Image (cartoon, rainbow, N blue to C red; front, side):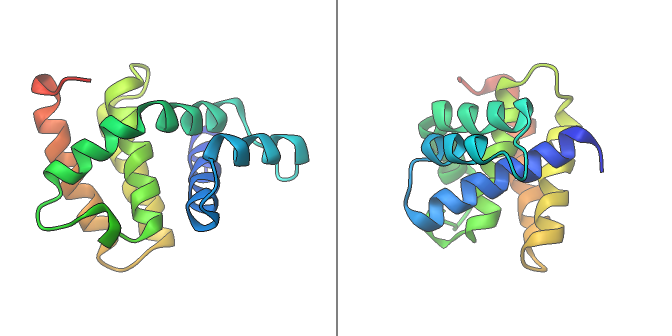
Length: 136
């Protein structure tokens, strides 16, 4: 697993933990950075901070384009992976679109339900096709 893939997994862990504890992800990030074990890379921190900074718009896009699915119905792991994927897709110019999608799919394929990979792939693929017309 590459360094950025590990960073995405670490960011997902922090976002998921925060959601489960109903805690601020930036505060959880600060705690994990202070602990240092396991380490939190700069890229993982960037992802968590980016998702938090743009979460309102990310969630709006997910809620709009996830046909017949509300954010509350989505498994928490899927939601965290989707938020990271949308953030990378729309705000990380150095991440190729295909990488943003495939990395999010890979995360849920290994961590979530049997149907999650298809769901995440379909939703991020839809957002990718709409990317030129989306305002961020």
